[in-house]
Amino acid sequence: MAAYIGRRLRKGAATTAAAALAVAALSASQAPGATVDDQGRQTASDSQPTSESDAVAGGSATGNSPYYTDLPPLNSPNPSPSPNLSQSSVIGTPVSIGEAEAGIPATVLDAYKRAETALGAAKPGCNLPWQLLAAIGKVESGQARGGQVDANGTTTKPILGPQLDGNGFALIRDTDNGAYDGNSSYDSAVGPMQFIPSTWAWAGRDGNGDGKKDPNNVYDAALAAGYYLCRFGWDLSTQDDLNRAILSYNNSTEYLNLVLTWLEYYRKGTHEVPDGTGTLPSSRSDGHTEVRPTPTPVTPTPSPGPTKPGTSKPGTGTPGTSTPPPVGPGKPTTPPSIPVPTPTPTDTVDHLEDAGTAKLTAAAGDAFSKRISTRAETAAGKAVGKVRIRFTIIGDTDTTFTGGENIATVVTDGTGVAVAPTLKAGEKTGDFTIRAIVVGRTVTGLDYSATVSARAADTLMRTATTALTCVPGGEFADQVEVKATNDGAVADRVAATATLITSADDLTVNDKGPYFKDADGKAVRTLTGLETDANGLLKLPKLYADDSTGTFLLRITTTGDATLTVDLTVAAPTPTGSTTPTDSTPAPEPSAPTESADPSASASPSA
Image (tube, rainbow, N blue to C red):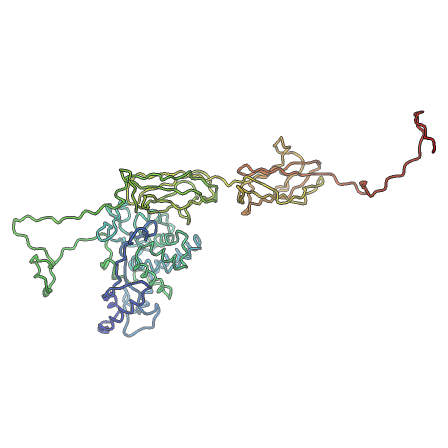
């Protein structure tokens, strides 16, 4: 870091004391928990998680690859020009430190902002700020190596991290046959946002609309990083979720603190600079000064100058020198031993087994009540823990895992079992497949079948109890409204049909009596394509009556066989002026007796 600060001090103007003060100030500017060594560099002691439980399921986007450790300057992004602190940009124009570091290449900046807009629409609850993408892009690739991209946003040269061969880095064997990183033995982080191929396989996105998902394209990579940071329902406006998301990208406390520092810096102000003129990073967490496609062996050479105490002269072969001892003529040389990497848990996996997954079924829009459980095993059937299992939804379905993704990666526990996130059924019904594979290991995948059925109801009931009556040629005053439930719960968005039937024993459509009207005002007696609302309610259109009188039947059915029959009465109106006798109407006077034709029916003698 001393070299990093030295670049910012005008030659001849920086004293040793000034440099020491700058280092101390930079150390103090870090987010809580950041540490620096006695040279002002961030330490990398926590670059790997201490245990699998410390890592977010699925590892990291970068495979915990090295990253650039350059820190923002102490002054604000838009400082006043200083006679003592200045820096020339790539094109040679003197600018202040803050202005240079705050400048982001135009295409790269556009990619970050477009990704923020896309995530704002797709996952508004995530609250992804583009400045977070800029902070990660700065730390991962120095904003695509200072904006070395073409007009479409693709890097002019591939940006590759070191091969992850377990030699000072994580051990991740090849997963893409070298398609992205050019290495068919081990994986390397790729592109401006440094995705490892196995992560890009499911996280990759097409950000510039060219029909391709290219990790070397800054639009694709920025959008993929946005979706990666927004999974698991994280809300990045909260500090805990923000920390989790950043650690899921590269699981290191130093990395977290560094990204948070750049995030805060960019939030204070930034501006665009021409592509290719951005400031370049200098220091990397593994001690290298730049990222190379693959580690290149360097032949040691003697160092000029006096020998340090305790060492011999160069070339003598004594421990402490920089060259090997000379080999005499004709004396065979012993080839250096090549360390054999210790097998990882992933290397020992022979096959996958189902771990008791029940039948996977759900109605459209509902969450599946069962989850997929997969166990990784050796050839001898022994469970293997700490192995990444990737679950991928395959088929014509809009079902997703919780969080809206169709791919999820989970680390097996101590019993070798990985439990996939909960499945959330979409609106498309039918069968589909979830495939489980081992990340970083070529073994046969394990397929699970799942089914999404149509939304259903088992009960229908009217929401009102008033009788439905009408006069011939008139219209019913009340509209029919019903409520659908399923197992006692509201049955929302359930398909329904309403038909005016001939009778309870004859379900054919009646050709007379009440009817609905179509858009043209014509009589129809069957309505299809109906659907209950979010509260399970369905309100039918107005009913009209023809000249037929009597009691007619309206039959409503739903998916799930819920049925309700409603009586509709059409009766002639009461004649004008007529009355119906009641208890309060006086009885008519009896008429005078008449002579009976029956001789025996003579009047009774008077008393």
